[in-house]
Image 1 (cartoon, rainbow over the protein chains, first blue to last red):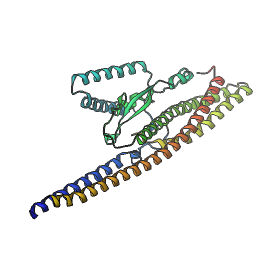
Image 2 (spheres, helix red, strand yellow):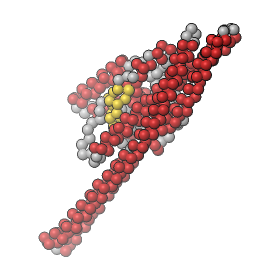
Image 3 (cartoon, rainbow over the protein chains, first blue to last red):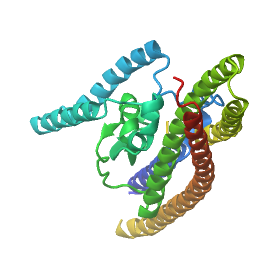
Image 4 (cartoon, chains in turn red, yellow):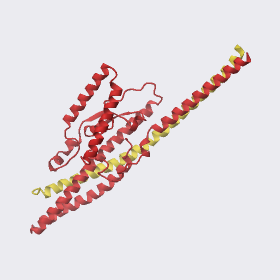
Length: 264
Length: 74
């Protein structure tokens, strides 16, 4: 009889210890995955305005292409994992692909390559419709979050495995609604700021190229004995742009340092 | 036998209840900390973004001025 009681007692103690350990372990892993995970990683090009956020300006094309291929494969694999199990899900997958093709067609002018003509229409180009995507984090270690992104930024997100539409609802989530709502707002704020950084970076690149051209033209005009008043007006315009560009560079560096990698 | 089981059951369930309450409390504290961190980061991000937006508008205005001054040149 005593043996039986000892056996039951030790079983109960063992089970409670295992339960306690399991819950502690889960908490640790959740803590590591939530919120500011991206702070740990530093971007190679951090602090170089215009280089880090080149998702829209078409630089490093060969690298981008390779990365695109790799990421597309990954994206397709993720999609297949998630949607390819039955016919209904396969239909959803095809529908999503069609949606994506439509977006690619509609927004063929992907990115910001400014010239005088496109610059005039910059507001229209910048203020594209917002698209809801399910944003996944690196390696899928943290739970995904639904965010609204500009149509200009959809491709960049799709390239690292995000999917169109809202994230599937997770049942049995242990986080409170307040926390989840704050988390969604937080990542939407980050996304908006990142879009602003991308846009400002492209404007900075365009302004720098215009400055170079304008200085050359100004030098030519001075050599061709153009009226002094005209030259002075043009010089004033160049100086004004120089000053504003200089401040923009500084602010862009600050913003990149704050926003960098938080959405990775 | 029943007596011993009753004796064991009470401390066991008390211990389980205590452990659950502690875990819940810890989760709430973690959530609050995370929310505070997110709020302060959001504020910093918004400030930087607003300044950037204002300065970008100034650069755009300067570019328009440049366009009007160098209208005839490519």
